Length: 129
Image (cartoon, rainbow, N blue to C red; front, side, top):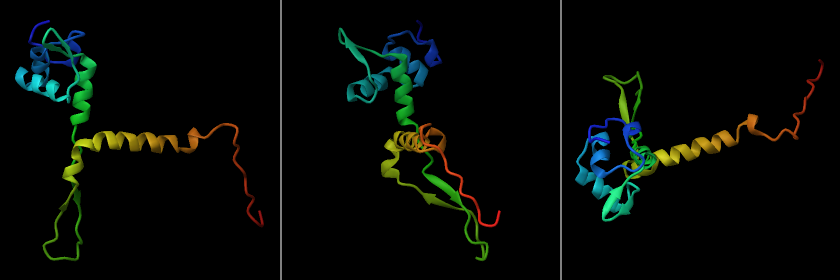
């Protein structure tokens, strides 16, 4: 494996910080610091960090930021009204992606299509029909 990898799929099963740095477009020192801090999962072998491609994917997913400002229209009745922004909770940004994914999973679990088959729906006849 050369240090010229540009995609996660180009990484070997256990990549060095230098190889991961090429994919993330950062320094190998930064990758080592992230491993040491526990933000990027790695295996320490003979004093060197070895990182699995799945751990690189997880690292990127955890660090993906949600938009913290949503465009919102203001009242058209105001003079000089224009689109404004709603500043989101910047202090909670780091956990926003996992929280959003959890919310999606909970919503999907509550869908009518996910109800057990043994519960059948009832038809309620309308009066006069």
